Amino acid sequence: MTESEVIFEQQPTRDGGYIGIVTLNAPASLNALSMAMIASLHAKLETWADDVSVHAVWLQGAGGKAFCAGGDVVALYRTMTQSPGHEGEAAQAYFGAEYRLDHFLHHYPKPLIVWGDGVAMGGGLGLLVAADQRIVTETSRLAMPEISLGLYPDVGASWFFQRMPTGVGLYLGVTGAQLNARDAIELGLADRVIAREARQDVLQALANADYRHPHQAVREVLRGFEDRSLAPQAEVMPRLDHLQALSDAADITQVVRRILDDPREDAWLAANRARLAVGCPATAHLVWRMLCRHRHGSLAETFRDELMLSVQCCRHTELAEGIRALLIDKDRAPQWAYTDVASVPESYIDGFFMPLWDAETHPLADL
Image 1 (cartoon, rainbow, N blue to C red):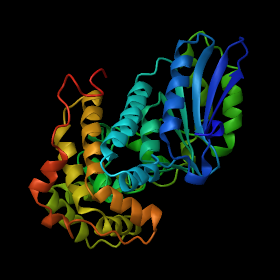
Image 2: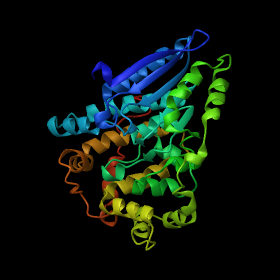
Image 3: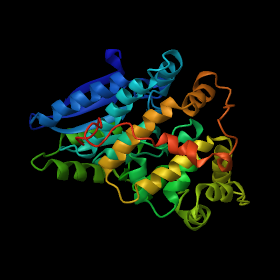
Image 4: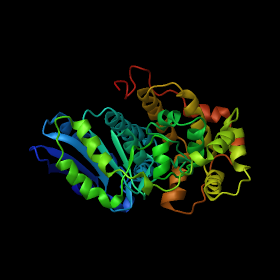
């Protein structure tokens, strides 16, 4: 990581303290998180958590297009293809650090504000969801698009999908559907809609706030800028009954068939169908299995299970093929191991869930 890939600043407040400002500064990759960026971010946030002069933390992305488009899967691809036999070690290090950071953010002791302007997908959505105050703007686009990569919705998605209306998380996971600011608010992924042009004014107002009660102070400032009229028309809730009907089946093969056979002429639904039709069949199974496994689980349990599954995904062929087709060769013609969801054997999916550690030796056992 070059020093500029994550920029740390301290904005003075009127009482002599600071707002810690973090800028993910890799706009060429839409601020995708590298291993070094994750480590740097975690270390600084730990320092600020213990610094009494830092009243709150603000996390944003550079470039004007994205908060964070996800993890640096291109680096993982290089390891998987150039260092065969070592992909498990690299995956354990990367995903372990990412999930440990996400878990830390979910429990951050100070007001943590994420400015989720533009693209917030995959690992970026994981950062956004973890914050105390999650801001979206009129340009925000959220998604867990792993169906196109041969991975699965991670960064706690099997936990936060469960907190949506029945069937919605499953639908989002298997289609990679894109959400706007209104959807983010209504599905519990964000707290406030604020105009993107107001960012600097919000920061200035935070600098002028009274921090005798930090969480209250931040909420009062953000409430003053909130304007939900800026949010586009919702995509999910107006279609809730329909999405729940599509997701209401006894197994993932039936769910996928119901979605693909849906005749409704609707641009948003059609885009989701098209994405699923060419997506990774194994991923659909992983989405289903993870939601079943974590229906009543804790966030920490979800992250521990995700680490095992993510390492296994790097040992299988699907993730490397998905990254190749989407981000390396960009031919958008992945050759998946199975042609459709119905043809994927349960025994193949079972292989992704073979335990790698016991409860005592798990790298995230202390969460």
